[in-house]
Image (cartoon, rainbow, N blue to C red; front, side):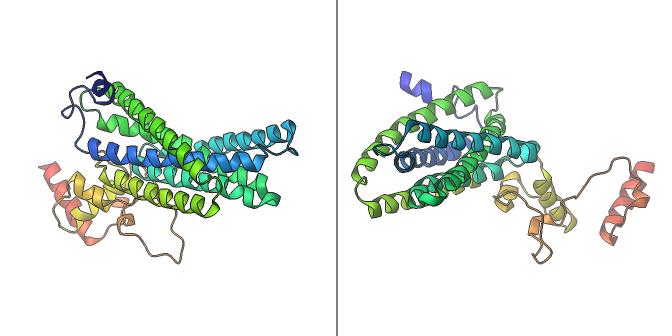
Length: 298
C-alpha cells in the first residue's frame, strides 16, 4: 500500500490530464534504458582516463575530469543564454532534443577511449551535449508538470515523478552493472548492447513526446489552427493539433529548403497597435476583416 502511495498520484486518474499515463510509461522506459547504458559509457570513460593503469596519475585524471566538468558548465550557460526563453513554449520539442543529445553524450564517452589523440576533445563534446540535456530536460519537465496538474497539484506530480525516476534509476543501475560485467571482455557485445538500448531509447522518447497533447498555444500550434480556419476547415482539436506538430525545435529555414506545412503562419515578429489598413492581406483575410469591422460598427 505504501509503495503505491509513493509512486501513484493522489486522486489519480482524475487529478491529471489523460496523456499523463502514456507519457510517464514511455518516459520511465526510456529512463531505464538510459541508466543501463550509463554504466557501459562510464566504464569506458574511466578506462580512457586511466583507471586501473599503472601509468596513470591522479593529477592527469583530475585535469581530464576538470575539463569535462568545465566545458559542461560552459555549454549549459551558453545554451540557456540562447534558448532559455523558448523552452516553455516548445516543451515537447526540446524534451525530445534533450534526450537525443544525451545519446550523443553517452556515445562520445564510449567512443573517446578509441581515439587517444582526441580523447579530451571528444570528452568535452560529450560533456557539452549532456549539459544541454540537463538544462532542457529540467526546464521542459517544469512546463510539462504544470500541464499534467489539473487540481493545482503540481508539487504532487513533481514528487511522484521524482520517485518514479528514482525507482527506474535503481533498477537501471543494477541491470547496467550486470550488463557491464557480461560485456567487459567483449567489445562486440558491448557495442551491440549499447546500440540496441540506444535505438529503444530513441523510440521510447518518440512515443512519449508524441503522446503529449498540450492545450496551450505557441507559434506552431497557432499556425496550425489559423491555417485550418483560413482554408475553411473545422478548427482542429488539441489532439489533432498535437498529431501535426513537429517533434524537433524549429530552426531558420535555409533558402534551398522547402517550407514546412506548419510554417506558413509563423510570424517573424509581432508589432502591437498597427492599423488594419496598413496590413498587406490577401482577399480571404480582407473579406474576413471587413466583416469584423461591419459587426463592430453595428
